[in-house]
Image (tube, rainbow, N blue to C red; front, side, top):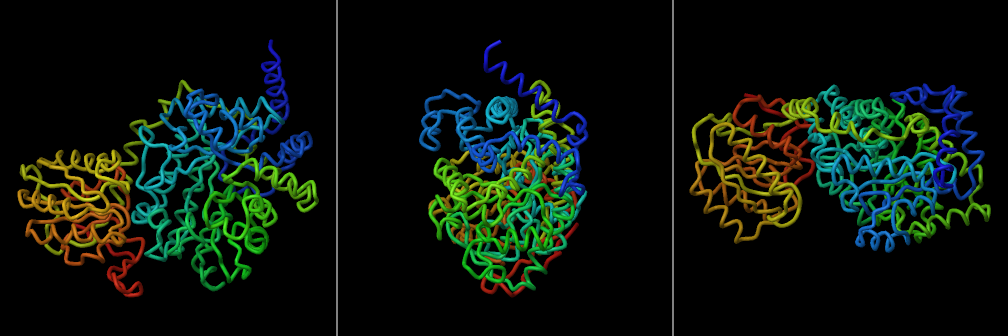
Length: 611
């Protein structure tokens, strides 16, 4: 037996010995019994902690990405990208050099090609982690919020996302969506989801949250958040409530700027904090910080990620959270305005963070934390506190018991017919009919009518974008099942005069027009397209396939629905609602204000028509 294989075998024996007597900790838990851990858990964790070097402990506090579809991907482009990003060739070298506690998957880094590939990558990462350093299994995370934020796409089961679930009002549906998502993630080796979003979206011009939130009512958001925490964690996937202390009332994107939340302490306790408190009370494994300034909580101008009064004072001491605090990406502009990249991770730890997500220069960040410990700026016991929480989380999610997945059984879990049926049923209950003034709906079936489907697709970009084609083509296919003839003409999210005129010409030769909008409240050209189509005199149905607020910018439209999502599962549900195969039961989970006054109500929270 070679040295590396012998070492791996010895590590496996060590881990097995550690979990003897505490195997039950690997069982799925909601987390209500999670905060401080039992005696068996503490013994396991202390043994692992005791054998770790300082370098290994600090490494456990970092989570980042690597390029490639396997742990030792040799594709020249992937190797070059890894060298530029981290100075290594692949995942294995990255893990061995920095003793990472977590890896995060993205589509842009080539990690999520298909379920079998993902499962193989996850197993390779776990083998690399267990075969190096202290032999601690890896947290493998992603952002699978569903709806508009998805990293693992089809054939994995897709759901319409948070605001759509808010429109459906069913915590049972929210739980089911999370449980199915969690089951499929765990089957491919992803054991931590950076979801659910616990932000209360009370700002209709919020550029970064919007439909990622369950809605604008704290009670609704709290109930949905709790349901999804349980759904994920009962599948042994760590849930993450984000973005603390609440990113719902901002018109600045923290990816590109530093938002300021000017809520009073009373408003924070009434609006923003309840969903996080509900998640904490339910035993959520982790909470993600927001790069937002909240003067009522900390008047220093520091974003929450770097604020000790917010993370330690409020989240830890007042709200009683003893799980893992993970930062949002440290590469975002909102956290990089006051300190250099070498200081940000140090300040985050001093504030109370446990895991540091995606620093822009991992080597700089890692060594900055090491230097801060060696100089005494950060005490060793402070590092131990964070690593202890991380190890407890890993133990509770069964990673010490068995971090691997059975690659031969992926197809028995991911995207199975039962899961798709559940997604369809849930999506049917989310579509909201906001306006039916012309009594155009429900449409008659089997008429052979010619229907033009036009407008924006799923993602910003040109009409040639494959994702946009998928959005409207899937809708057209679903419409044709009801006996109509369709023509699809993409205009994109910023249709110029030429594309608008072409759409108008096609509309004049159609019996019915369905125009989809995607954040038209930010696009004058989308607004003009809708108005031009309405001026043709043809029957026009407008469907907001992302933010429901678009109707305020073309109130002359007589028929308007909201799906809150452009995923095919939502577009198919929209077709069923249009033809009356499904009664629209969704209710607005937000208030829609008028276009010129955010305080004037156009359609109230809870509005929704039915047939």
